[in-house]
Length: 128
Length: 253
Image (cartoon, rainbow over all chains, first blue to last red):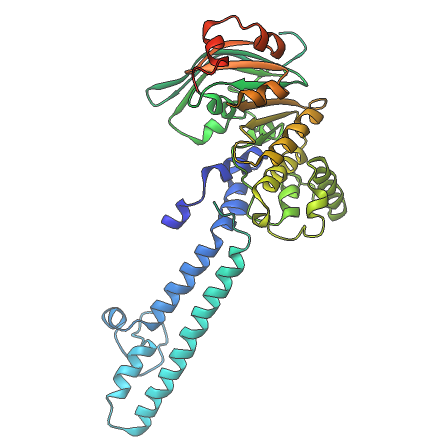
C-alpha cells in the first residue's frame, strides 16, 4: 500500500492531460510505475508462505498424504521436514532431507527471480 | 468576446475546502500568442492552469465556479468527453513527468490511446514530434530505452514532444523551466517562440526576466486575484497598478 502511494500525482496528471481516461491512466501508467514493487511483493509473500511452518500448522494442519481437495489438511514442506525428521524409520528421514533440498531450491529460485524481475521492471520506472 | 481570444475566463472562483484560492478571475487569453501568468509563489497560478484543463476534477475538495470559454464552449460545465477536451491542451509541468516506458512509447502514447496504432504511422509521427522538440538527434539511436534514463532537460523536451503529439491547440506550461539548467531552459523558451504561430501558449512563471524575454501578453496575479493584464510592452513599460510597479521592482520576491 505504501508503495503504491509513492506514485507522484504529477505523473497521473501528465497522463490525464494527454487525454487518457482514468482506467488508461491506471493500467498503462500507474501499474507500470508500480510494477517492480508489485512483483516483488507477490513473489516474496509467496516465498514466505511456502516456507512458513508454524502458522500453517494451525490453519491447514498436517498430513502425510497428498490432499485431494482444498478442505483436507495439507502439509507445507517445512512441516513435512519437521515431522518426518523426527521419525525413527530411516527411509522417512531420508525423505525429510530430500524435502529440505527441494525447499531450499524453490526458495532460492523465487528470491532470485524476484530480484531479477523487479530489476527488469525497475528500468522503466521514473525516479523522483 | 473578440475573435482573437482563445480562452475567455469569466468570474472564476475556486475554493479548496473553506479557503478561497482564486478570486473572481477574468482573463482573456489571446490566440497564437504567448501569455505569461506572472506572480509570486502561492498566488494561484498553478491552480488556475490546472483548472483550464479540468485537472481539478482529480481533487474532490476543490470547488470551482464561473466560466471558462474556449471556442464558445464552457469547459467547466462541459458534460461530454473530458479526455477530448484535455487532448486539445498540452501540459508541461514544473518538473518533467515522463511516463514509465520507452522514449518512443512516451511520444506514441497519446496517439495510441486515441486509437492510431499503425506502426508505420507512429514511427513517422514520433520522429516528427521529437524533431519539433529538438530532441531527435540526441535520442534517435535509443528510442527503445526507458525515458527515465534521459537527463531532466531532455525529459522536459520529451514531455513537450509528447504533448505536441496529441495535436493540441493550446499549450499550458507550468514553470516549465524551473527545474532545468540554463541551456535546457533556453531551448524550451526558443521552442515556445517558434511554436507560437501555431499554438496558443499559456505559461506560468515567477521569473521576471523570462517573462520579459518571451511574453506577448502578461497577466499579473497576486494572492488569488488578477491585478493587471495587458500586452507585454505596455505591462512592463507602463504598469498602471501600484502593486504591479512594486512587483516589477522586486518588492514581492
